[in-house]
Image 1 (cartoon, rainbow, N blue to C red):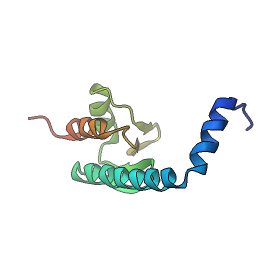
Image 2 (image 1 turned 60 degrees about the vertical axis):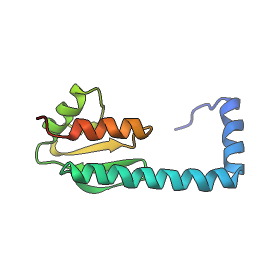
Image 3 (image 1 turned 90 degrees about the horizontal axis):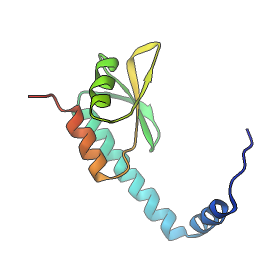
Image 4 (image 1 turned 90 degrees about the vertical axis):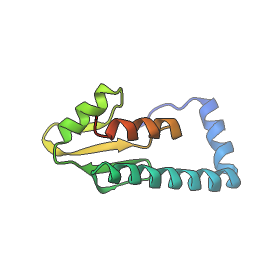
Length: 109
């Protein structure tokens, strides 16, 4: 649907899209971070089923258990009520957040 966008946000967006160097650098950075997320998820035994550069849709044998494990560490991911096998995990905001995710997905010793 339609919604209002503040003028300041529109100006910022126009500046960003007008800066082709920024666009190239940002796109490359998001691709790298998305690749790093896929690697972390794969190492944790989650099966990548697709998604975008900004999130991954993964399969887990027990998605509820993974979701609970992450929630207990303060990491929010999308769980699907009628699907016990899949989660949607968004791109962490920075390297520290990715490291937190990786640690939270590691088995407890």
